[in-house]
Length: 157
Image (cartoon, rainbow, N blue to C red; front, side, top):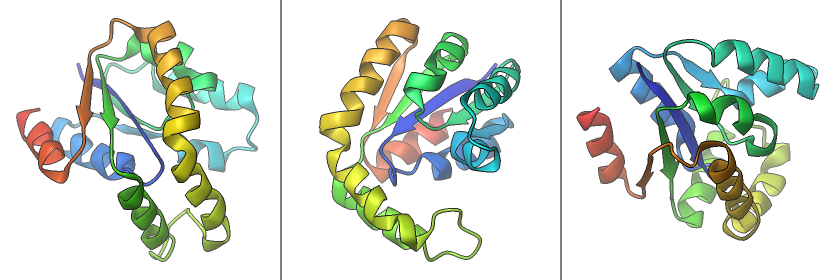
């Protein structure tokens, strides 16, 4: 069984890593951003969808949404992978992805995303970590900081 929960700042590479892990393991990707955008953004509908998807034997869960979903996802996870990328890399990736064809991220949201990235370490990471400890303190955590660490992790899997 492969049940991996990917965490990290916007632009850290969670979705790219999710795709790579899915190719390697055959586990389906559960893209929380895509599900959230595809719904009417009602928390109960979002949670019901995630509950059903995370009941599967294998998955790669891409996204934070800690306060709304960790009680559902964390107890089922075999591994948490934190992408600890520098803010400048996250910012650059957030900027460049908005210009890719078919991308869900839009240029009009870029300033909001860049503010989020800039404050992530101070505001969001502590909340995510507290909720991770509350709902999955026993789930092993791997922290990946560089492209070479990410590549080695994927290769070892």
